[in-house]
Length: 156
Ligand code: ADP
Ligand code: MG
Image (cartoon, rainbow, N blue to C red; front, side, top):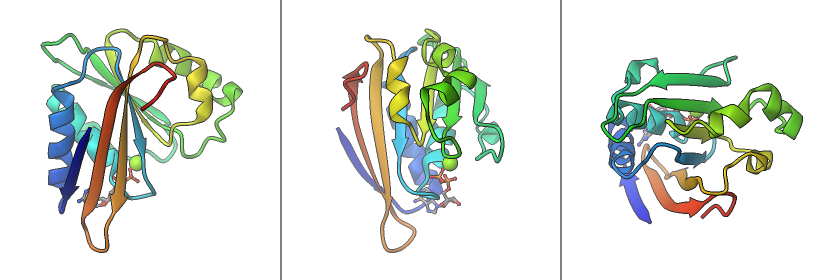
């Protein structure tokens, strides 16, 4: 478990870069926190550390899934970034989005903002799952708590 406090977006990216060093292909990262907590910022740090282009990471208005190529020496070839905020999150919704293939991509790290319970339907039993909780403090600070890795649907 990691507990961190950050005062700038750059520091939040640093915490993500630190987590990236522990990630393996096939890992799932669930991001919890209110709007503007810093979930997308965190994903930007992950993508950067995994050899992708951080500038491609944005909070998309309509695109719910983005895939960034990665070049990690540990065999992570891409990062799938899902933002399920706008979805009700039924099994049907997620299936239409292609979630089954995405979370079963053995060469990817999958980062999910606003994860839905229905996601568990397709999480591989042996997938390692990390949970990142981000909370704003009274100012521009953020508390970041990372737990994991848990196993499959048994999220930490
Ligand atoms: P989310 O994806 O959770 O909705 P974003 O990462 O898109 O959040 O946005 C977070 C916003 O908060 C950005 O505008 C960012 O610049 C700002 N911010 C300010 N301080 C921090 C911090 N310590 N960590 C992360 N983001 C911060
Ligand atoms: Mg976001």
